[in-house]
Image (cartoon, rainbow, N blue to C red; front, side, top):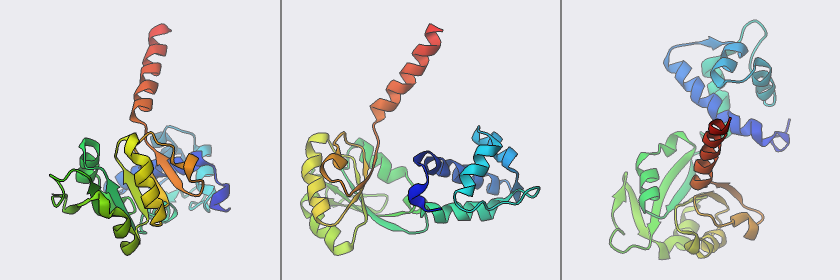
Amino acid sequence: MSNNKISKSVIRRLPRYYRFLCELEEKNIDRISSGKLAEIMRTTASQVRQDLNCFGGFGHQGYGYPVSKLKNEIIGILGLNNNYKAVLVGAGHIGTAIAAHMSFEKLGFNLCAIFDNNKTIIGNTINDVLIHDSESIADYCENNNIDAAFLCIPKSAAPEIVKRLYDAGVKNFWNFTHYDIQGEYSDVKVENVHLSDIIMTLCYSMNEEKNE
């Protein structure tokens, strides 16, 4: 089956499969049944089989799934071994935390550079990645064949930065701003992160429980 026909809900479950399979491998567990994997995933064995069958199955009835092999298959499906080149824009609190603490090399990316317009931090490094002046972002991306940009900047700054990145050939974004990139550029791929939306969803769940 073509990946274009696989639902987003299945794709979004793959990182959870990967995370739990890594934990199983660390515990030296060689094989796991769809039922046991479903327990860990808090879903059903049928859902596990359906999800994995979208990509070829990887298991055998009565035999289960080989943990290491399935983990490596999911690495390939997600593209975690592609080492895509990325830049991070915005070295404020969120950007600094992301650059300092995320293991991008395990997530399919090589963080090549950080950009900011604060002259007092340009030339510093975060986790050995150099902070450049934002004015040089287009030239840097063009010269280094950058694949993706992680945006940790205010919404007001996003339109100009995104245009410069797009014109430099960057069409993949991890977007912490509230700027609607796809509304302006229909051919880009974007994963939006709205932290306030997540907190409000938690608040709703707590409110529902309170009102039961």
